[in-house]
Amino acid sequence: MSVLVASDLDRTLIYSAAALGLTMPDVRAPRLLCVEVYESKPLSYMTETAAELLTGLGDAAVFVPTTTRTRKQYQRINLPGPRPTYAICANGGHLLVDGVSDPAWHARVTARLADECAPLDEVQEHLLRVADPVWVRKHRIAEDLFAYLVVERRLLPEDWVKELAVWAGNRGWTVSLQGRKVYAVPVPLTKSAAVREVARRTGADLTLAAGDSLLDADLLLAADRGWRPGHGELADAGWTAPTVSALPERGVLAGERILREFLRAARRG
Image: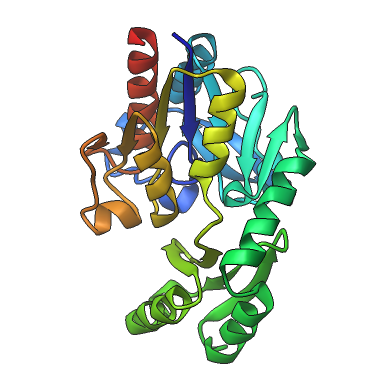
């Protein structure tokens, strides 16, 4: 049986220092492997045990990193094991094959966005108008597909995100709050659509998935089996589904548990 494993990266398999969640005594903390460097500084980590599990997963399944990151942001990550043949970036907007974006896939995605939701310019203009400079640190456009803000989380009014979600929903967009980032993403721009395309190309019989945020919900629902950690947007909302297991682990140890579940399920077929 051919198995495809599609996993979110940030706060699912890899973790910033702030997201590690090392609540145990220091002497019991796991050994960590740095898997991303940004501006000459270590940025993202996984446990060394998770790194071994991920390397082993490459022998049991087709592993597909599936992220909202841009291609440039994804390419900073140096995961252990063989380089994946396929990777999904920009929340499904780019399907990388051997590191190169498939132009036909990208054209299909952009055509669908033009037909089904409000243009990016309208959303960006609204964000610039309603976001308060007191708590906004950066405004960003990602791959000309979606927008996000980097915010000071402790100053961000809770109702503001809810109001933005209502406004965006009426225009075919969705809103996701992940750490210090507020994403505005077109509803048709999904990880699940890109994963289905990879499954078609690889002839996968079984698809496994993991993710922690609202933008991962469609990915989890599209998979035959899915896992979410005990932290993140989905956990905070108590979200689950019949084929999705809600794990108790939080932080970097959740990434290790997810990889154990992937490997166990892939070997069983």
